[in-house]
Image (cartoon, rainbow, N blue to C red):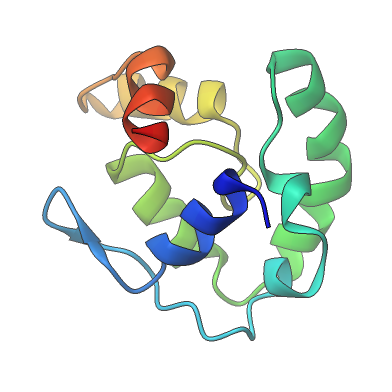
Length: 110
């Protein structure tokens, strides 16, 4: 298991920055596919992987909770069918704190 996948699985059900992540119980659709699909290495890869991941996220009953958590937390990867860039745009539109992705990735790998 890669470090990125381990981070994703460990985020569920835990609190970060005062926000509790959706509880990961293995019934989420993302738990039934290769977790690496949710952690692109760059924007180009994210665009390609979103084509695969979005249909999975659309069918998942946890999508709304996942998206809420991802928008309000500094998580990396594809969450609820949104990329890091997508969530930065949503945060900006909602007037929320916009964090640079470099600081997000560095904090996760620390």
